[in-house]
Image (cartoon, rainbow, N blue to C red):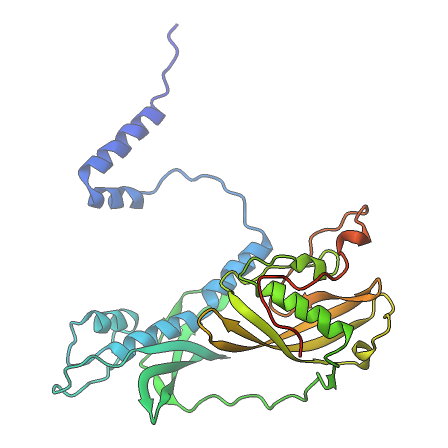
Length: 323
């Protein structure tokens, strides 16, 4: 008795080669043809929420629309910029420049600065920073873009040309929390100086771990290449960080660290860091660096407090000291 031969896989391979031989158009048609449904695991609620948040955010679309609209010209309706604008909003009015103006509009960098939602949709305020200048200062203009969609992961739609608006109001300045100056001769400033020199030492992060609390991971910036790093001042949010004596294990303080880094081109960069320090074994260790601290890995019951060594001398890759 002859066994039936499965022809499906072979026919599939032959079909794919035939499509490739027929050219890109046939391949596109083949891709569009419905295929046998393959059961897939449903995304987890967390993954689904992340996908929905990415689709629902209108800031990127507003930035793209303003960028295209600023470069479009109604006197050139067939230009790529005009076509791109009208692909988003079919009836959008475009800027019109005098025909005597031969040069292209000044390039602008656009970024969304505020998003607000209404029952009817959303509005994004986009800042456009132009290469044109006013008395030597960059020209910054703000445009409001209105649209709909984005709820429950729905598609986004721009509803019309942008409108120029005033700069969004800024929040009132908060009271300074770092109001306790830390003496430059103290142990804390010395430790922070050594840490920041290792952190900014050419992106290698050599020796950074020795200044961190156990379980804390901080990745050094890869592009940093400062030949000199000087501590300008350190301020804390509590007086506990001012004492030179040994602190009780677990004592915490938040500090603001101002430094000046000098790169290989001789440019001086004023840099500010906000950190959390924790006392352990008679020294201060960095337990958090704002916007740069990675989530601590799971700790093992056998982990030893000796994972963080005593503060060593400054890394040789940079020079300078705490002032």
